[in-house]
Length: 128
Image 1 (cartoon, one colour):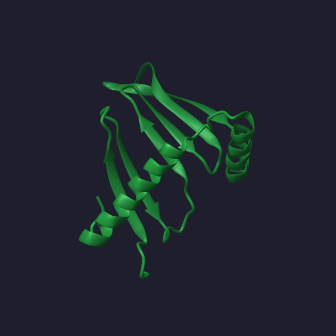
Image 2: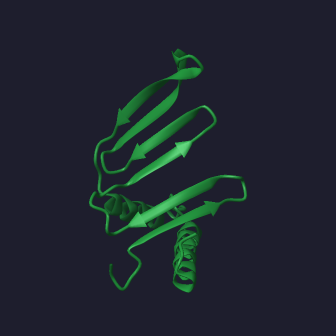
């Protein structure tokens, strides 16, 4: 719809076997910032916009024959300004001469992954 990438999807595979499916869209009708983590017997859904975490897991008994009952525990969090907290953490690490929560190397690696995805999309016209 524009001269730039409007929607991108990438499947990232890590050395430890973890797989992440990442989607970014600037043409979506709804603003979403969510992450879902699937484990063998549970799913954790994080809604960064609503500041809520939902943990779904197998409960006692069955919902239907052969279908386990699913239970959910939810927790909400207070809002905060992520950019302000990031800057505060950086300033505290400088004043205390201690490492920040997210290292420069971590930031560099995240930027490298984002740039690599963008390069592949531009070269192939297809998302990973």
